[in-house]
Length: 151
Image 1 (spheres, rainbow, N blue to C red):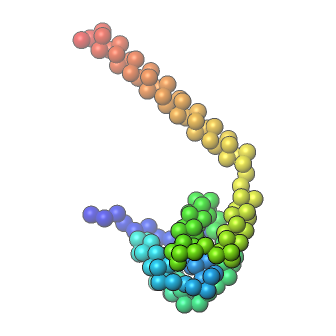
Image 2 (cartoon, rainbow, N blue to C red):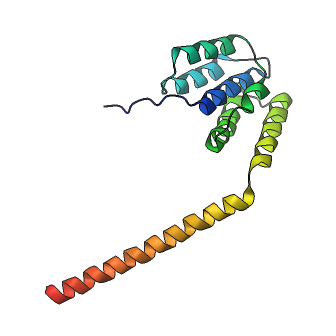
Image 3 (cartoon, one colour):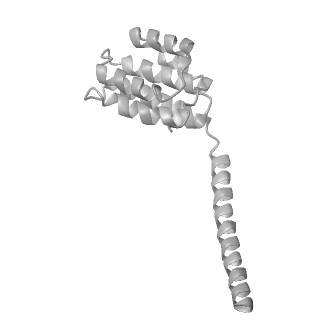
């Protein structure tokens, strides 16, 4: 049985609209780019209204910045940058206009990050890993003691 398709959040919806707009930047929205996007969208639960918007975006270029500012989830922005690089090379070239938009959006994204908070989150994760390792070692030690005592 295949996993259930997940619906698009508003942030994800705008991620895909931004990606479609970026694919139009070089004036060559090629079949490979469209196919790439459609294939990924087919794995999601896209509402009919959302698909109608995507279809209009496929047919007519839209300003990418109108949608980029509506991507509120950090993971959606990160995925956009990954997908944009893949899309830009679908037609065999990464033109200057595509580079300019990529760098501008990347700079805008980076300016929204709280690096001190990110460092703190990383330290918290590292501490949880260390604590988990200690607990695991402690549990192994307890099991060894029980085995030694009773067996």
